[in-house]
Length: 589
Image 1 (tube, helix red, strand yellow):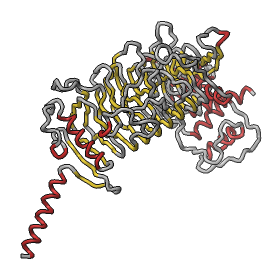
Image 2 (cartoon, one colour):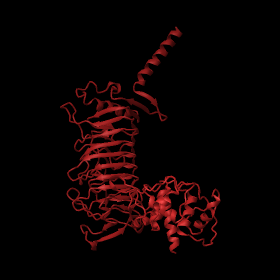
Image 3 (cartoon, helix red, strand yellow):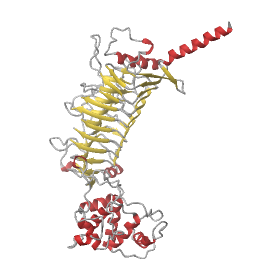
Image 4 (cartoon, one colour):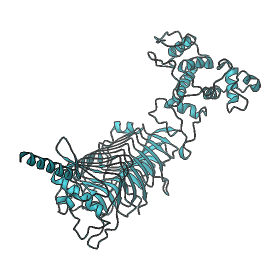
């Protein structure tokens, strides 16, 4: 009897374990469940399947909803969506302590037809609200809403709004500790991919925001940062108290924004309220119809190391990369602006229409803020300065301050490039031309190794070497160079001036120049004379045939690598531009 009872217990345990595993695949350390679903999964515990509104169009909505409601019951956990297409017609409410993982191959599609006359499809996909209170009014204020919510994609995970007008992928309001990363958002029309109001501690990283139809004013952002304010009419979530709480500590980094109205911005400001510590860095922003970033009442914001490219110039040819109003202590630095009429403009601003009762908002910049502005770089530009307009609606010269920015001829060379001075110096002298880049914007490829043939070209142009009359005869010294070589004249000229001699009848045009070889050819080309300073130079690894010349360039401060010269390393294009520039300066002193 005891054996029989034990057998029944074991079988029952295994049976219920298998039943549970259909939905509950793992248990995390904190005791929160992880559920894994596919597009063909059943709802949790069969919930909603007997609803008259459960149909082929709403089944994925009810599927995901059932698990989110269960996760509210368990106090949080993880929902994993496996590969496949999920068409979601109505809002999915996400409670606290929930992570949604979209595996590689997941496509969340905004559905527009609910298949029932009992309710229409909604405009948003996700709202960070507890399902149990989602229909109530005035529940959340300040940052006291749902917390610790993440939506994380893997591989090609995609959220597709299907160009449904005024649709939104994610609405976050009165939240804390939000993470959205590694997702491709696509096909927006006059809504937002992310609308974020009254949220504290959020990270939006490594996403792609791709493609939108133009909105009527061409000002709809991929990421909208606003305040829940009835006066400005930009927020319509009934569960909010509309207390005008601004966002705080939001980081937007390493994202790609392409072919949109705007990338990031605020529509209207609430008087006296400032979004604080907004950090936007290392993003690629390209092909916007309006100013890619619209700052409005942001305090202590950092916008740095972003790459802006190809903003529609507008009829007045005056669209900006960043348009700023009501900023206090902004650190906007080290950004690159390519093919944009104006890099940046600060102006006093006043809401029009809804929110117009608020007073005009002004920018407040310290000397440190102004100095940071000059570190931005423009390429293929109309204006090489940043405009600051202090008086509302006054844009003439008398009411405009101008902050000069760095200019560059190459899309991949900014003021932060350690070889910027040399590259720009030789570019302006037409010694270096770079390579064709995307959309006709040149690239310098600073970190590529420099070939011996390109070295000969740079010397020939920098020193204005005459082309020898006997080029064909000179080239007979090299088995690997013919008169048809694209740089035959320059190679012959450098040989005639005894800058290059080759090796065993070979010029080796595609071989990289080493750093110790570079020292020797610099000394020969510029006839550099030792000044006798005898700077302490570590000669470890330097071939004896190059040691004297390495010492000369150290004494003349052409190199500052005194303890780790790396003599056998190849010279990069950027490094050689700097060495050549310093050699030129040394001969002119």
